[in-house]
Image 1: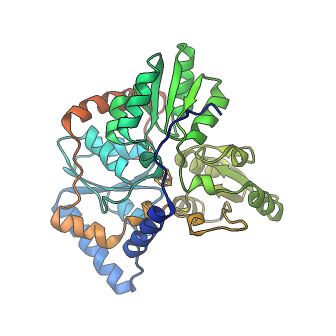
Image 2: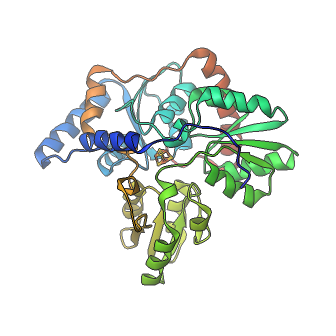
Length: 358
Ligand code: SF4
């Protein structure tokens, strides 16, 4: 792995534990009648405010269910951005993490973008602050800067291309064909996978996702021995020893489609388990198992849910609809530069395959 020697900010245990406490508060379990009241109020307010709920696959089941049943969308980050841009609603409620809200605002500056929690971060975004990225970028002027969608608006503004896990392989292959050398940020595991698949000359930022990096190959092998008929589906933010055990590697949308298209009836899935809502909904007869993260000495950091995604709950969703708080703002000088690299990706990606969620 050709990683940069850069002193980037790590996410420490205290920050993760704080996020887990916030997530517990946001995802409190309700009595059925209390939940029904919250859902009814949210439905009414979405209509009254001309708002649409766009949720990521990793949010809680009740958030995904609400998004689907109110004319919104459950999708990966690329599709969330497209739906937000093309939807007629003037207010976008983005249930996900901060960079997703920022991307929605970058593409739809005239709309109001609200998020259930502004504390919902992403370790990849936190690993790659804009000032440090700019400094490193300036050291490598001969390289094309390709950044993953999981970055701040300010980092996207410094990049030539933005990619997601759905389109990174195709875009990097395209750049390689053009003879470009690449500066990649911020996920070293996804970068390593893309580099091996494409053979491109890539210099990798050393960031990682705190959820995917915790999958354990030895425990996955043991689980596979118990379910020899199972296919292993892996998100490429996972380490290479997990990717090597996969029957299929792809983005959340691609993993969902791989399970639909497979004749197998049992799957071990190495990504955030929020995806199980859509998998079980689409394939109720198939069995989906979480890829293991445990091991000797496992800590609370080994919990399989992304604590920041879990900060999206019914109560804070209702609050932002009521009072219009948690609005996302992106400085115009940053937005106009970030939108160029995002639009480059969207033109490339949607020309290659039409959107899946409407
Ligand atoms: S699952 Fe990982 S990549 Fe996704 S939002 Fe959480 S920390 Fe970021």
